[in-house]
Length: 153
Image (cartoon, rainbow, N blue to C red; front, side, top):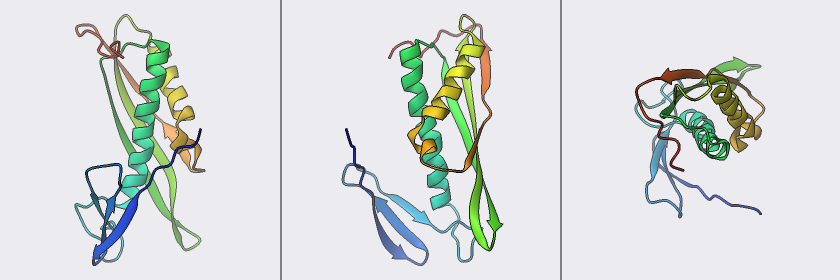
């Protein structure tokens, strides 16, 4: 089965544009990042969106694998960064770092939770579509007082 996702872009002014999709109600303003000539602060850049795509893919893939594995968890959050360097005169993203933080109930096994996070990164279709190194640095926190929320799939 093939899926298609349409995203449209319209230049607005200076170094800015507006992303839209016929399938989504919100538009996203994008611009050249401030590190580049005439870049703009406080506006999503292509670099932010690229890293966000990988990080959100990690989340959605994790949720699917956690559900299928019956992993109960209390919370999930993730920080992602990318390193940009100039190589052979071209700006290139050289590495993506994903730092998911997963809180699990003490009844869950931390090794199993870490394995599910690793499986999620390897199964993410966005990660699989790029050739950049992705470094996964998971943090598993064991909680003794809260009830797992991830069991209501």
